[in-house]
Image (cartoon, rainbow, N blue to C red; front, side, top):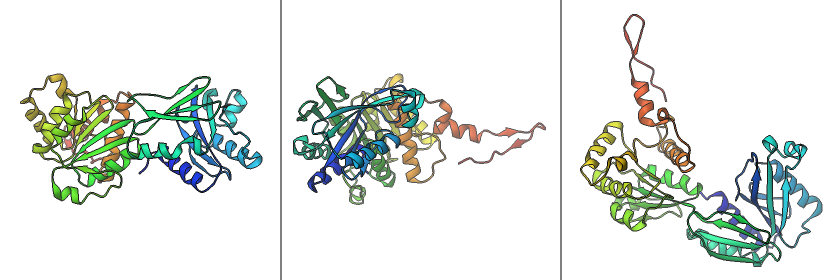
Length: 346
């Protein structure tokens, strides 16, 4: 599963190769509420075909109509603002009087889309600087945490995976997790020293590294944009890796397992050189409680928790798997003092 940005770049590259005229549209500023964040992109072909999104529908419709009715008149980038008036905000579906500013860039060979796509496909984080006067483009390595920047003459955008996810174990759940995480702009690394699991791996674009997980955690130099998820159920593989990850700056460290197994894991980890604060960082059982049963559902549950944490959302404790199941399994008592077994919730 490609991220939205990667889909846009692939479409732009394909259309240019086929001789189509197309434009790259980027959200560069927003005020008030806006459906899509700064940095969102879409590519628009001369016949009105579009890949990506900058508003969720209404602005795309207007841009497509403009291309169909008037053709491409701009040869250099232009700035376009929607939603200044209350009438426009209502027309284009911008809630609460929101305003959105776009850069519309006619694409050509000098846009360097093919080179940018090659870097992103190799999981490189790239800075693209667009000269708003001439349309010339410069590419350079980007630093982790870099963000879009707009000046009077230059638009700087960041492309490539903004986050890293290390998955320990290459089982079926890991395959679903890797697929969805790739679409969420993670650079996914899967580690499993067990040959039988590596041979069964089937996720395109995500390879399995043959290494001991704790060694790989140290090698990757975990930073605040990295998450670690242990999925093997094997203490020999998970525990040492979790220990090293908990000592790092990783924004999320978690392990799959029941409440009982996670309690036992915490007891084992106490024997290592970890502080109470470091142990408190361990998530387990991982994920948000959504009644997940299948590997695909569990992967969604895990990534929902990662998304909330990386977005700085404080989740209530009752949304965790452990708390939700504790509450579900508490016995209920009738007014007569009889215990009533609660219905299992999914």
